[in-house]
Amino acid sequence: MHLNDIWQDILSYAQEISAWELSGLIFGILAVLFLIKESIWTWPAGIAYVIVSFVVFWNARLYGDFILHIFFLVLNIYGWYYWVRGKKDENPSVIITHSSVKQSIIFLSFTIIGIFAFGQFLINIPSMFEGVEPAALPYWDSTTSILSVTGMWLTARKKIDNWYYWFAVDIIATGVYFYKELYFYSFLYFLYIGMAIAGYLAWKKTMMKQTHITV
Image (cartoon, rainbow, N blue to C red):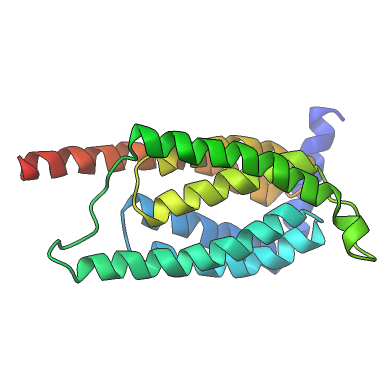
């Protein structure tokens, strides 16, 4: 397909975008903006994004992303609780920390294993559930899904290395959603690439301030 054809498809898609996808775009951007600012509002915005995404990903047959967002819903609720609970302790807020080397190796190992295991599950979905169409791009779908679960857990625990995982997810998802002609979601994750970098730098700056205060 030529670039001109792709551009025409994008313009046509923008004119016919569903309310679900537009809502997902808005809530998704808000959730990350609030996260960069360490605002508690990242969690309700994230929950709204998850609910909207259920519809979008099911219709696109991206079952991995659909299942992923079930975990996202749980982790958004947990993250909300964890951040609020932290504000009631001695510290005014949950401080940003970095995973230890041992923790990082464990997270990465489980992530790699999870990608292959979940990929196989997605491939076998049609044989397990009658009437369900084959998953689209199962291993790519699995990769973004499992990386996102790890990233979400690290986010909920306020670990700065969550941004490493989100950066990888954003690059891959931009291509996957573009291929699946979910152009607004592709655009959303393209924006996320820059926002992941900005988020990392903002959290790093906060960590340095925390260190000075502690010292």
